[in-house]
Amino acid sequence: MKHTIELDGAAVTFESSENDAETVGRIAADLIGMRGFVNLDAEDIADVLGGARVIAVGEGTASGEDKVKAAALEAMRNTPGISGAKSIIAEVVSGFETYLAELSDVAFTIEMNCGETVNIVWGHVLDGDMDDSVRVNIIAIA
Image (cartoon, rainbow, N blue to C red; front, side):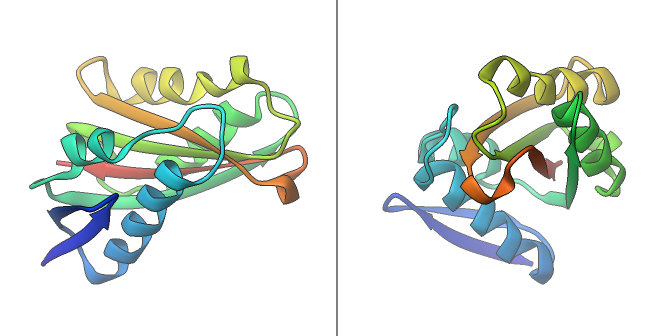
């Protein structure tokens, strides 16, 4: 089913299930509008998502040592069909206890598990309530 979301005044149309469309819209809006260490703009999202088919959306949460890697691995396990993705949008949500150097683990972990040919676009959103926890949301795109 085709869906359209509004990103900074630009309409982006994509195909997905009804359930995934709302999650995709929320993730895109967060990555563009929320404060974080690595922000994306509407063009970044539109380039990957526009006209594409969303395979699935998944989420993973972790805390402690290697939390970004652990959350990314859990998110990939929770994203059916991710192995067939051509592109992936990843949102890393964390508190102030996560360092910028740790955040790049999300792209590295996805690349190691999905292959070097997958196009990975990722961003970070700060959530003061997360403390030492990290949540990774993944949008797998065909």
